[in-house]
Image 1: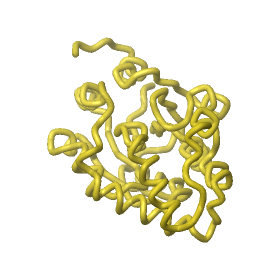
Image 2 (image 1 turned 45 degrees about the vertical axis):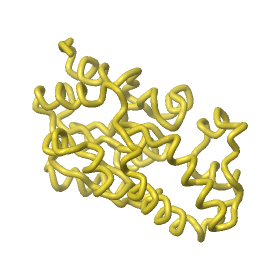
Image 3 (image 1 turned 120 degrees about the vertical axis):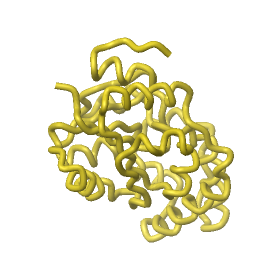
Length: 214
């Protein structure tokens, strides 16, 4: 049976924030005194966990909350530079037509998520859960399940990072990996992944077994 509830990550899944994140990371590195992004090894970094990336750049654990707040505020300041990935608007329309319950789970600010989705798509989502800590998504998933009344087995978390897969595992919710996000798909597939989506347009087709006109 197809999932009744879809929980979407935002950054790297719905919205293309990768280039902006690199710039903000470098700004934070200068401000909080750790190494700037190792751009010569981006392919390697895109195969690492978030913790490994922070260790690689000498970010101490006690600075992670400061970094998260700084990046969240900076995203708000540059919100007009953020757009949805190509194909996401079509995907959201098709999933709404299939009456799937759509939600968002993000460590980004709700103002950013709602602005980028725009009034056209915000209304398609039952709930938008924002401001989660970098490694606190599992508790937020449980909150979404409780609010919607949907069992974990009838839901699907769709994301692009290893920490998303790990959070899904903690809650025992199926996971769908996207090929266009922060972490390389080949790395995500080394974890417990139930679905792999090569494009946004493929999500509705692969989950519901029908083709759609664009």
